[in-house]
Image (cartoon, rainbow, N blue to C red; front, side, top):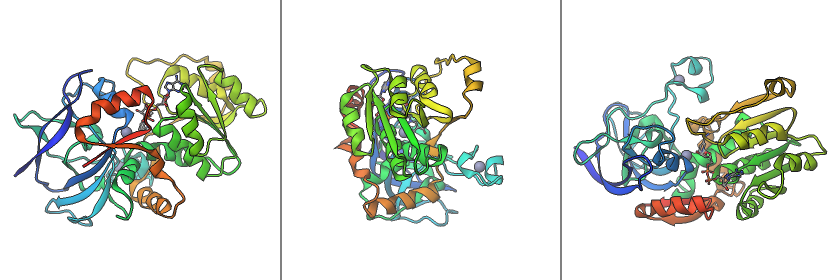
Length: 361
Ligand SMILES: NC(=O)c1ccc[n+]([C@@H]2O[C@H](COP(=O)([O-])OP(=O)(O)OC[C@H]3O[C@@H](n4cnc5c(N)ncnc54)[C@H](O)[C@@H]3O)[C@@H](O)[C@H]2O)c1
Ligand SMILES: [Zn+2]
Ligand SMILES: [Zn+2]
């Protein structure tokens, strides 16, 4: 039996999203049907709409979600109807070469639902990041459901499912920020501010927030930024160096996804420092750097997918820290909205008015 629900579709490259009827199959082997309670609007959803991620339209958008398991497939264990879960896009396989080497956060064969969700005319949908949670119900692989303490508010929990985890993990897992480090974060949206929060949690002594928008810089202070730089009015590389005794930061996290901001990150770090790219570039972007500088400045240039998180390890832990008052995740929620307001939320995101708009169902 298929469930007929409302969902938000990106039908064609660059076209406004539409709220339409989506058919969601009952869960088969290895799958779970989830009643979505909340789903954040991430910049990656906008990238999908713009054709920046792929051309597999129509996309069922939304991937930063929490909800309650409604039904599970016949062979599923460890997950039952009524469980409160955060949806993840890293359901590890346990069998690929990364998993077998004990590094499942790099899993190269993550699981998604096998059956397809469709439009009412049978057109198959591509769920964003294998989730598709701007919908009343969605079908995922059982492993994409991570059980957490239901005491957390759904609209806050969902954020750990993508952007906030990506930022926290870029600082904590990928960069390995530690006590006493200097850290600069370029781009202070939801992802960048989460990187600032992660650096603060890890004990960084200086955290420099860089953005082109003063409002974003003001918000960055609430997550632990010690200094702010508006890169429209000041040279960010010069300012980062000035703020770090002329050296550059130990770690620079790029959370925009553009060649020019990557270059700022590259030159804003100290010798032997670390650059972490979290922002998602588009397929046409190119990077041009003197190879001698790549060699001569040493250190490490890393990318961070999903903050190198392991959902089973990280989500329940971060929820606990939040419930203890040590991780103010609620500050990321700028507004809660209905499913029909996602186009407006994209516009607000582009105008810099929100950190996260969160759809609540
Ligand atoms: N690697 C991952 O796993 C992962 C996960 C989620 C999102 N992302 C990506 O991270 C990026 C940020 O996502 P978000 O949801 O925080 O987006 P957002 O739109 O909320 O924030 C982007 C921020 O960058 C700032 N900005 C834009 N141009 C800039 C420039 N030239 N210099 C400095 N700042 C600039 C904007 O003012 C804004 O504050 C996106 O590319 C998104 O696709 C990556
Ligand atoms: Zn694997
Ligand atoms: Zn995302």
